[in-house]
Amino acid sequence: MVETATLSEIELSEYCRAKGLFAEQIEAWRDACMQANGGIAQQASQLQKELRNKEREMKTLTRELKRKEAALAETAALLVLRKKAQSIWGDQEDA
Image 1 (tube, helix red, strand yellow):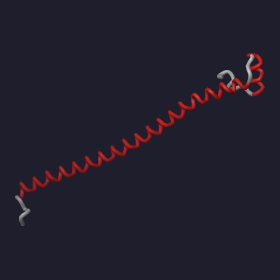
Image 2: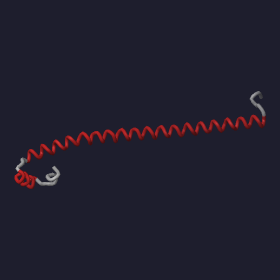
Image 3: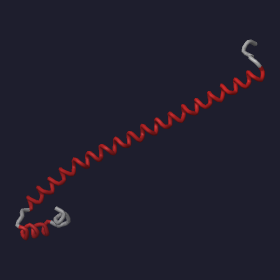
Image 4: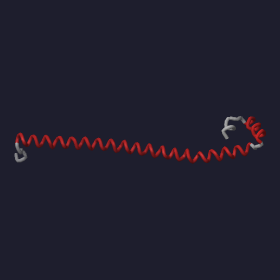
């Protein structure tokens, strides 16, 4: 197959005569190779698509985690400030 891949039709005919083959046989072999590799190419394409989806999902989850961590840090800071204010000025909620 590799030897005949770049041959023109005339060169292929000469090659077939020299090797005792028919052009149809080479075409059949070429088709069989393409079909055998076609499944692999299709599987690789599917895996690439799944990888992109997983990367997108991971990016979304990472973004959401950062947002939640920031909100948690802000809440913790507000609680600390509230405790400090209560210790300085006392409990002002009754007023």
